[in-house]
Image (cartoon, rainbow, N blue to C red):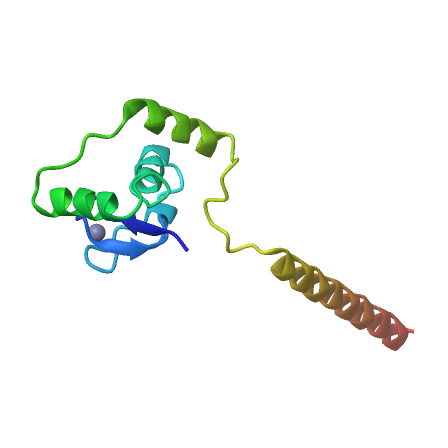
Length: 122
Ligand SMILES: [Zn+2]
């Protein structure tokens, strides 16, 4: 569980890539905006443990903005580009297996229909 702060409005949230309940900003939906995702990652308790993160959120909420550590930001951008970080963990291994079984079932069904169709034609 990662505590994070919304990059746009400073609202606290759980998970760096979860949609913000206050302004609706959803970093995961911005697949190509790696900088937004990097900033979202930076504004989490991974980099600002405890009260520090809350202080960052308060600064954003007050409209003061935050100074992103450019070195850390560049580092995170690089991590995101090389996909070392699982940005969206929606595709768990279990889902893949279920998907394959469903796909296999669908193929079998199509093969069965084709076979019956051919038998019927004779
Ligand atoms: Zn927000």
